[in-house]
Image 1: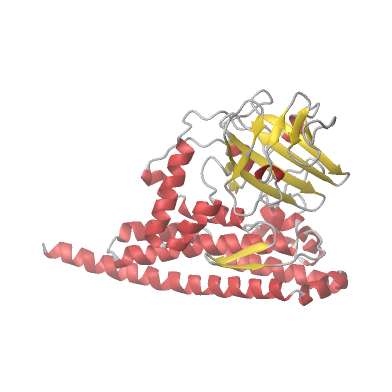
Image 2: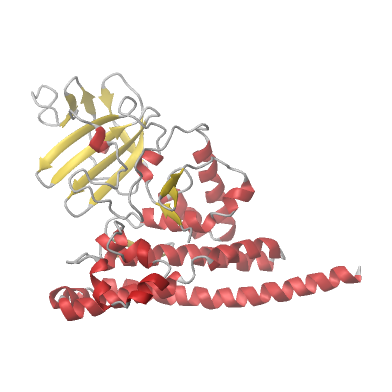
Length: 397
C-alpha cells in the first residue's frame, strides 16, 4: 500500500541553503548532555537550538547583515533561551563573542566554529547529542533538499494559507501567523522516498492541503509543554517519566498491528517519531494535531454549505475524511499505553494518573474530536440535500 507521510522538518526546509559552504554553524557545549547550536543562513535568517538529552528548544528569525555585529530578531513568541535575542554578538575568526560582562576580549569565544559541520546540517529536530528526532513523524531524509527554484514560493503559500484560513476560522489564521508550517517547510515522503515540493502555488493546489498545513502548524505550535486544544485554548502539561509507545506491542494482537492504518508509522518498533519516542506525550501531540486539522476542514465545509458552494464543501469533507479516523486510532494507542503502564510500569502509570493537566488535555481534545465527527455527519447530510435541491432547480430551467 502506498502511504503518504508528511514530516515536520522546519529548520533546513525554511532555508534555501543546503551545504556547509552556504550555512555558517556556531556551537556552544554547555555540558556533556547539553549543546546550543546557531545556524546562520545566507538569506539573513537563522535557526537557534538548545539541545538536551530529552528535548530541544527551537527559535527562528531574521537578522540585519553587518560586518561583525550579530543581533537576532526572533519570529517566535518564546525565545528567551536564545542569548542572541538579548545581546549583540561579535563575529571573530574563532567564533562569536557575546557582548556580556566578559566582553569581546575573552580568549575563548562563547560560540565556536565546529571542525566538522556536517552533524549540524541535519534538520533542527535531530539532536546532535543523541541523533533522535524530536516530534518527527518519520525518519529524517537521507539527503538534504535541493535548492529552491522559486524563493518566493514558500512565502506565497504562507500568505495564501493565512488569508484562506481567516475566511473560515480566524482563530486558525492567528495560529498560522505564529507557528506556520506549510509546503517547503514540512517534507513529503512516499514509500520512504523524499519527494521535493514542486512549488506549485496555484490556489487550486494549495487548497487541497489545508488539512495538512493546519495539522503541521499545530505541531509547530505545540512547543515545550504547551498543547493546543483549539486556537486560543492551550494547556501546559508537565512531562513525567515515559517509555516508548512501541513497548505496548506485547499486548497488541499481531493482526491488529497490520490492520490499523497508522500503527506502523507512529508506534511500531521501527518508528522514530515523537509519538513513539516521547510516549504518551508524543501521542497527545498527534491527537491534538489530527483533531485540529480535521476540525478546520469540517468547519470550512459547513461554511461552504451555508454559502451554497457544495463543490468546495465536498473538497473540505474529503480532506477531513482522510484523518477523522485518527480519533479511533490515537484513543486506542493511548489506552494501550496506559494498560501496559499499569501492568508493567506501575511507577510511570501512577505519575501519569497524578498529572491532572495531562488528563484534562486528553479529555478536552477527545470531546472536541468527537463533536467534530458528529458535525461532519450533519454537514455531509446537508450538503447532499443542498445538491439535490440545486439539481432539481436546474432541471426546471
